[in-house]
Length: 360
Image 1: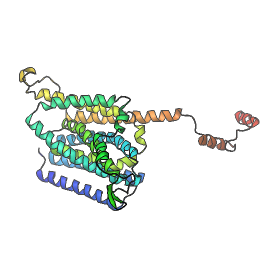
Image 2 (image 1 turned 120 degrees about the vertical axis):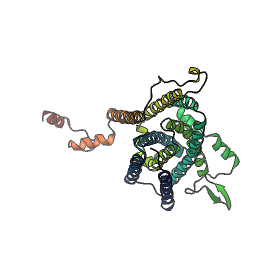
Image 3 (image 1 turned 60 degrees about the horizontal axis):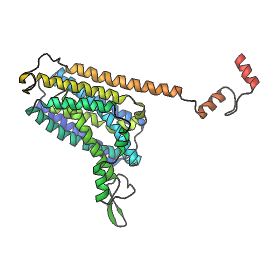
């Protein structure tokens, strides 16, 4: 079965309208969303993605639906990793919290445009050169190693200003203060750029780097440009709300990068296996297909992706919980315990009271 053209066109139109409505909502009512609001939006987008997968099952069968879900979960996990860098950028440039929604939305739009370009290029290259899967696979395995073992200087490298940001600082006049979410403002009667232009440039460079990683990953699950693009749209649509929902929780997901690294390595191996099945390189097996290589199904990929994220998340939260239990009791908590036992805050019970209580 194939996806009907009407379904593909209609889906893209609806998704674009949702993105435009989301953008207009931010422009009309800039605010810091509450935990409840962020939760409802994330649940809405996740439910929308699952309904879309169900429609794909109805129109084109389980294989297409499985490819979409596996691709969406892969891109979603990589997008969560993207949030770590967004947090660093927001912190580094001291972006006002009220303006962060607009900044994130611009970052998401930049990401969609860049990923759309990469998807078209990737599809065209794959159509002409099947051996490119060898390169994609090797690149993902390398990326997985870098993700799992980033080194001590990884965070410092992320915080360093990119070449684009340094170039902007040297070539244009930038004010010291923000003016809401405006890119340009007027100071002493002259138009100047605000630091927001630097933030957008940093987000753009970050999105470019993540697009280079994520597009080969999803092409390891499906070669359908439509599924690749819609999976990216659904993964990025709830990213803004997820940023405010997770908040400080991101710091607690200490093992998440291991789960993402395992997923990337798994898909990298799958791409290499696929390249060996489709092999046309004369110096490998005489240019013949390699039939003995195992075939990794879409459903197996989906199971590995889900299991990796669940294990990484549960292990992270368990480790954070264990650290909290081992931490010394804060002064306020100690006072509360003393008050519950009948002693005034900060006053140790008298020796005879301790004896009476111990006897009791």
